[in-house]
Length: 300
Image 1 (tube, rainbow, N blue to C red):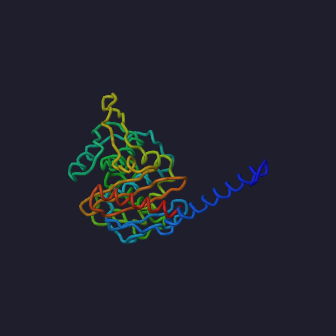
Image 2: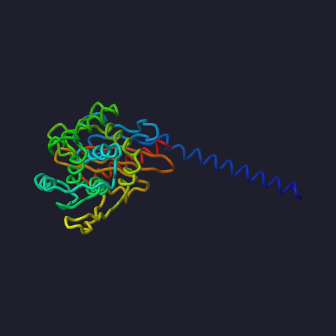
Image 3: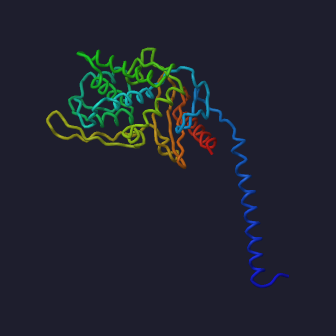
């Protein structure tokens, strides 16, 4: 039997050694599943996930197959606007009847902008990215395209979108619309869209907008009064359902199916990715959730 101070010290040392051994064993056990993580199965026809810090791939499924992108196109719309020199986010745009007629004709998602109202560029960006307003997209393309006619300005703006894609080195992306309602030549891939989103997320205004769940704009009416618009709710429900979500954009359409470009940050690591041509709103969210979980598990 060991007695006295030395005995107490020895017993403490033994206890520490036993505890350390148990912790090491537990650590080894908890690390094992990360090595054996199963690649998820998703319903979406295309998917891609990358580590946003260095662009390394974490998951691919038909990642370079071109598909219609629906309203995920609007990520590039916002990126082009935010890249304008001497951009004034508080500059106003007067809403034209053409924007309203366009969304009615195409039965398109809209921000319900009122003809004659003066709306700031910042507000238009929220209207573009939260409710996926095609009227807001049209207003921005008309404002930031160059030309003497609306058609010329819109065409020029779409040209800027394609130039931006080329400058990112994307070889499987082409835009023929400012909002995703294309004429057969509006396409991208999961990998390319993820790269577009990653680039857009470098802009602080873009980051702020795409992580906002809801926004209420106050616009100026024709008579100089103030109109409080109906609240715009972000169509990206991952913001509420997946902890750490910071964006990015939904998309859907008869040709595109259900799409989602997503990003989340946990423990200082950001995973960003895309699913294209999923089967429903709920399924694209389930697909994205699986891929986010997988991405974070791979990053450890």
